[in-house]
Image 1 (cartoon, rainbow, N blue to C red):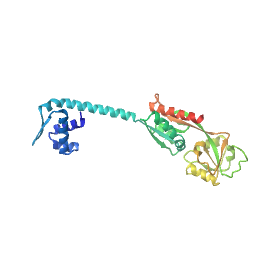
Image 2 (cartoon, rainbow, N blue to C red):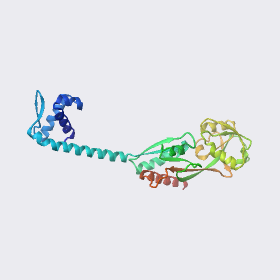
Image 3 (spheres, rainbow, N blue to C red):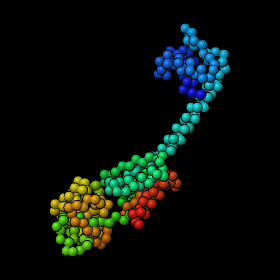
Image 4 (cartoon, helix red, strand yellow):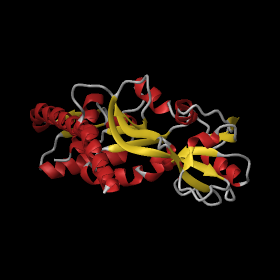
Length: 293
């Protein structure tokens, strides 16, 4: 039974004419008449009479109208339930991540997640500064964050990776054959500070070791800072994830004593983790295991 034809028939009956119904349903009067004729042929009964005053129900039509109305109500309820279930299945998980994590981790993580949860969408956004993921999480504007752990923010935190700090040096910088760079050697040197509050990790390492370089703030992206170091405009220090794939033209050495930042996955504090986020977390942990192995 074609519910669309039944809906058009009921509209015509309620309005009393095909011409009025055609204005409501968006069909031409001849098209609407053709659909009702087709419906009558399908069921083998004449349901309406036509005359110059409009349309009226036949005896068979009067008998069937209550059942047709009940059928259409049940059909609408079914369609609404299907739409609600479909909408629920197409949940969206909002993720905020540092650009470096979005670039190097998220493609593989999302590939794994899509394979186990094909009906859950992911809205991935890269953030502009180090604290932004936590601020978005606190404001309820994201569901999951990938960032470096920060003091003063509470969330359901899963540690994932220790991201080591590296000294970024001009290519001709004399490291005297050493395979690491003493953090104290930054003291008094021209230093190009990373932008976007990523100086928090750098400054924490300097304060811990009593280092005071001549800081030159740079309101540019990480790659530009690296290129500036390559031209001898100063030294810098960044986490390995921020450096990955950008080390041409500079010399990099791990900082000693070893220092770094803890990268992790943060979520809202809640008693029960949504199923989709739980599966995402499982995919993340599996991916991190492959990196560690």
